[in-house]
Image 1 (cartoon, protein in one colour):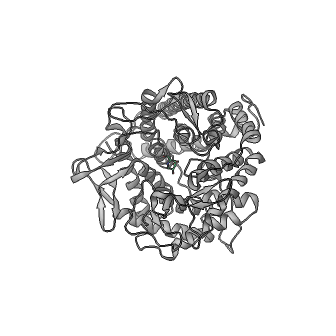
Image 2 (cartoon, protein in one colour):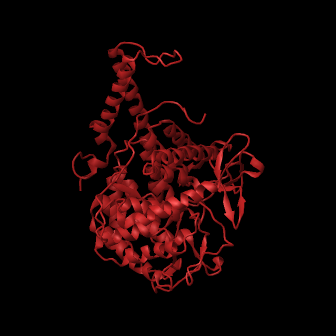
Image 3 (cartoon, protein in one colour):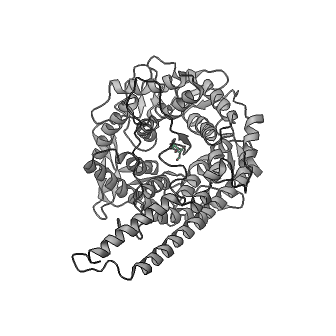
Length: 548
Ligand code: DMJ
């Protein structure tokens, strides 16, 4: 593997500088922009209302465009470096105080094993280190995985958390680096998780003892399985089967979806508790795009993308589209500022509450919208923009400019923070990254930058990054969540990088932001050609022409 500073080998394709030096895609976009401006000049350079659009000679315009492009590149490159520096600070703090443990408690400067001692932060960080070109750090982490990572733990692990962070993190590191140690380890931990799916319906138990394989559900769910915990392993387990040639992982994970499909509700909205013995969803439990529901919907779309949108995976897209119609029935607007938000629902009753966790929805809608017909595509894209604006206001409306955990919109009021902590979550910046890539509107970059600065101001301490106990007072907690390094900082870095860095044509992100390479599925009698339609950025726009 090439070392840091080298311009050859695998790494160079992942370094933004590579694209900045050879900006074929960016150049093409600017050529298109120049051509459009040229055409506008030809028709007189005026809008119907007499507004002058363009002035100056061709040479002046070309010069202005070049200056504009250079300014954007410079700003992005400076922002990207700041995010990379933040990642280094988070990583070095983890190395110093919590090496090999699951998470760092920065205030007390020690590690804790919140996931059973699986090196969660280390594994979650692998691909972020790789993508940012932090080769020495990546190699050091790789050595620990090869020599010290031991999954034989007498520990009741969450099947969901272990899959998205550990299986996903290892598979992503394998896809990026080609280093087989990551695949071996991914297989080891997945083998320990597999017995969780041995239920009468195939809907998994959500906890399992990693050493003994005894599986059961969390006591607080009354023995029920959780929707998100049961429907968020498909990407990882399909990828694992593809890379190992062993179909068992994929079969177990996909059976969950075919089981749910049998009794799929007409609005595609499933309550969060499902009985693993009968397969029946408990109608008394809530329907939500926030905690415990969220990533089930995300994976319906992403498995379809991972499967190259072919016939084999068609039912995932169909189920997702049904669920998106259901999502529309949960959307309400505030009376004062027309802020769109997603309600939760129990039985027939809507509640005006939205989790920050549900702020992944704009990104998901953007990712799925371009495969609708143009009218529907526009409708879902508009909704995505509206929801992203609301999510951004979750941040902007507090004194610290950081979002609380959830918000209430009682009586049509704009928003009131409910649970007021912030644990460094990524969902809003995730959506901003998708929106920026698909619309080309740099306003989303500016919003992301504002959020990053608020994290820097409120959450950075000498020994890492902490969350806030209260976004109104700024009181700090004592935990650096592993997803801050896996997701929040990675999405921010990509927000300021060329879209060709981990392109949507080749990669699909798991719910913990671990990119998995899209590989054509060979498991069906599928004859449709590969068909990945990804909307291309339209060009950079300046200012917020959309919401304010
Ligand atoms: C992450 O573990 C994943 O993004 C998951 O889907 C939701 N919760 C956290 C981040 O908030």
